[in-house]
Amino acid sequence: MKTFYTASRVLKQLLHDPRTLGLVFVVPPVLLWILKYVFNNDRLFDSIAPLMLGIFPMVMMFLITSIATLRERRSGTLARLMSTPLAKSDFILGYALAFSLLAMVQAVIASVVMIYFLNLNVTIAGGTFFAIVAAVFSALLGTAMGLCASAFARTEFQAIQFMPAFLFPQLLLCGLFAARDQMTSVFYHISDWLPLTYSTDLLKRIANNASWNNDATKDLLIIIGFILAFLILGALTIRRQEKP
Image (cartoon, rainbow, N blue to C red; front, top):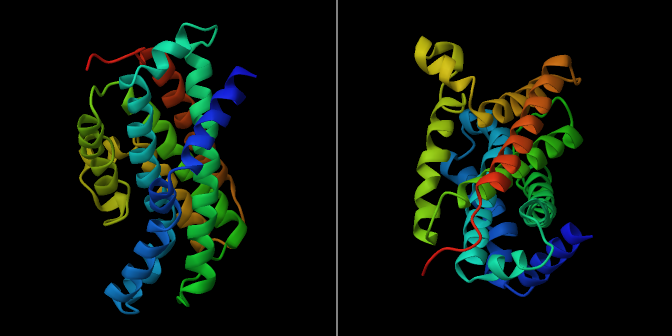
């Protein structure tokens, strides 16, 4: 009940913040629309468009979650909550639940817009349902990483600075720009430990394979493992309050 209360409070705050809602629900589809015309029907876009379903929601949820959670700490809200029987795990799980609901809606909107409204020549052999599932879990991964990153930042600016450290190496090594098996041995083995690698691999499998297979199941389970690990790390390291 404490977790659900926290999630309900966060959702009520977000519903009264139209700018954040616009950033969550409007920006990813707009970025996909812009990319469509930037590539101007280039075949390269047809191949990377399904991967964008995972990357855009993950980046957005990372930013929003990390900044919002840190603001709770800096404003003293977390310290006041901790004076009640609310545990750190209740706080983290409540935030994770609230932002996960947002992440799910965001991923569904971005997926539907890309597949049905942009008139792309994108082939998703595995079907729309599995593409949306992969996008949702990628957004949940961004939420979990954002909660974890907020525990190490002291200001909102630092939370934004964590994005290059958390996300940019993953974007470069996940296989989006170059196949991982074409990378040097060092970078290939590093990419094995990056969560976005498995999100990208999962979306590639769904785009190219007509049926769900064991490799897709393995990728999904690894993503879930990363989500749980980041949530646990965030619960263990989060501080009650930051000094102004």
